[in-house]
Length: 468
Image (tube, rainbow, N blue to C red; front, side, top):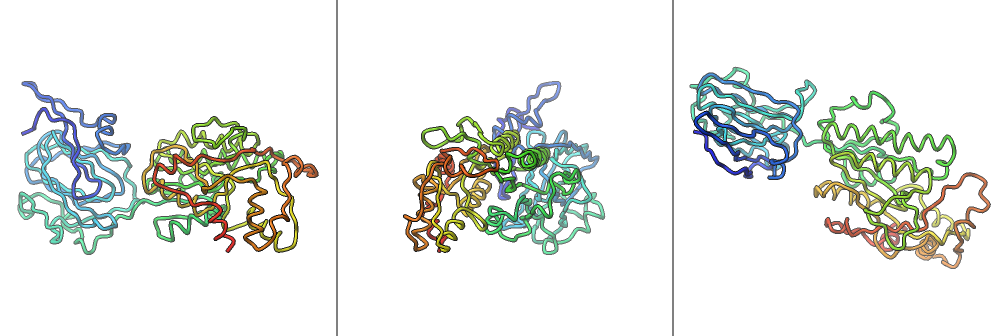
């Protein structure tokens, strides 16, 4: 008998992510009414905002009709329109909860959220039972499915009506036992720009698991119209965009301007559209160049952007596009140092070769070591931090480029007095080619990132180990 007057609530089960819902049902002599799916109320009460795209109904004539156990690579919202079922769910996902079982009865006043990869099955307890389920993907022959035998001895489901006495398909009876089940793998993460300084650091952080896919410019072309259909995007949980056009001076030329906009805006728009359409988290690496550098003190995530250069304008435009993706992280950084050509390596080389450089002393900021940047990105994803913009650099007292060059010389065993500080105008006075304007202040406030539980390392401590 359907229970009336419940308050909408969710209860966790022994299977991670499997949630049982009590649904308010309003009834009188005419019958009853319920809101079977109400996004705003249900997500506020704790249901994931899983984005259903299809609604299916399975009508069952007889008591004892039994179906399952099927695990698909999408989420389900299961309920009953009429009748009553005994439901059984078995975790068929890779991981420590593989094989965990949960059972309960469901009538119109209850529903259950079934996460991707959890096997679903039921047995009808009343005639004319209508079993309803919303899913957040369409059936695909390319998707990975798993199945479990209804009579599996390990799961040991206590069916109210013995399987020998019920209506069940031959196909369901032929499913494998738990020991022979192919688990549903976790969703994948695609790293775009995997061959750059940050891309290589992300490889070190995430490793070589099949869960992570690394793509460089040689294997991935965002301008290819076929890219949008090149993968089953519903199998991806995150895209990390570590690719960018970063030749800030060349971007001031006609050809460079076109290339910068193609990579930093048009390409980003392609990723944003894919992420939005498929419920993917998009991580996008931004830059201090979106600011004009005139602020006194560190820039926060809320400060207005005022880019000075073409490069800065393209990064600002890319940020605006990514900000429209429901699940996104814009990781704003500066002065990146990693495995590759960079300022620190250049200064160390000059020191060793006996060259005494003139270095800009009127631009101030912090270095960002790629280990910190990659670690922060992983932290934001793993902790499910609120979507938005996060400043990410290494920590420590802001320094000018000239001061940092002096540290490099000293840590390399050379005299820091060999470094001469000059203004930006002096430094570029003899350069005939186009020069992009730089922000004088690139210092980014890190308090928002720290509040999520990630504390970046001190840049001078990291500089010492980097040079060692």
